[in-house]
Length: 107
Image (cartoon, rainbow, N blue to C red; front, side):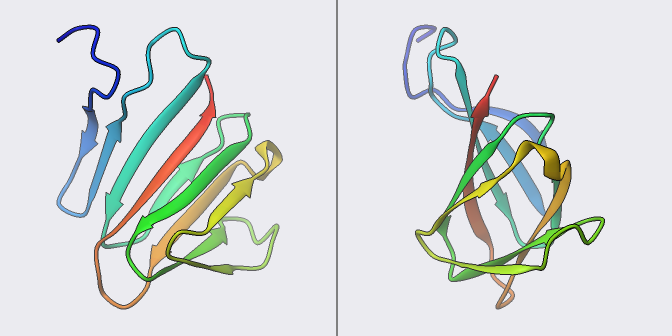
């Protein structure tokens, strides 16, 4: 079990947000996280570019916490990039539904 490639590990959990580390091997240079949420969540680039994809749910809005970019709408299965320079950003689900986003970044 310790060497399974697609192993999931809960990193944080609350009533409205679940963050899971997904199954890349520890020697891979990319970290992948799956976020499940039904209320807005705030994330940080932690100084590295972020690649995200809406894997479940109709739509979300990506917003800057400091208004450094205009909010933009993401539809199901769309992939989007958040530059490292953005810093903190917010993901807001629409349509009162739970959504899932996969996030990948360099460790």
